[in-house]
Length: 326
Image 1 (cartoon, one colour):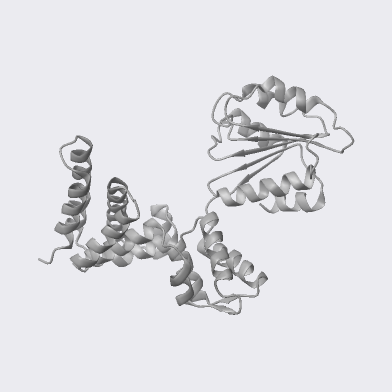
Image 2 (image 1 turned 45 degrees about the vertical axis):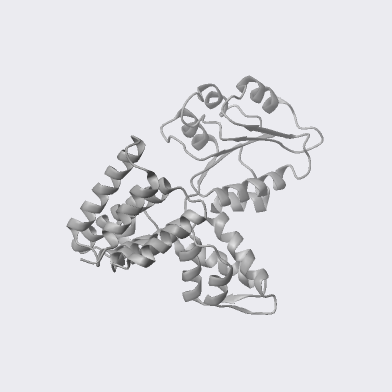
């Protein structure tokens, strides 16, 4: 990202850029900055293309047109799928772009073996933006709080990220709510987070699995009924439940091999707080119990999809069985 930020600040641009990766919030943010830096309010020299049904000949004709009373013509192409297939014609053109034209591609998934990816890499700059680490999120969030005259402790910052998740779009909205909650208050407290922030579904599932792990059947079912009352489909709850059982099983196995939290997070491909929670929960389950719970979750899903079991009854039966005291 450093090169992209420096180019935006200096106004010295390459002919082609690709912004890709999972973190939609930052991708959108940098796209807006890029457009503002080059085109500003000038729509005459700005070409916007989105989706997979784009006329490449039209794009090239636009790129060949000299900018009107401006230094650059900017062409923004988003979600085209050209970095997976069908980008041969435009890839060929990447080495022939006029100095006055700048291309910006914004994609989610890319194939690094594709001709377009290689062409952009050879002729411009690729900025891959994936999910940010908890440390990076904490620094980013602290800056927003500080800019608005607020402070938050490291412990409460960690708690906020655990509650709101690591999606920056969601987290930014929760931060806005906390800033506006009590304008006279300087320090964000845990009580403020509990009062205004919405727990993400995966966090609610953590709570449910916590209840299952200590055989608290009432709390397990209360968690489930709350989700149902909030219109969460039973099948989605079942999917998330099975996913968590699988993560716990992985965490238990990796912990037994002597791995630490960060190593386990990398091996599982999840954020640190999810790995930490899975490790903690794994201590209350045996390997056999986790395997059985995971297998029965899959069987319940199959029965529901075949119409042999009502989805509400199926999920409730599973929760009752595994939260029951032996």
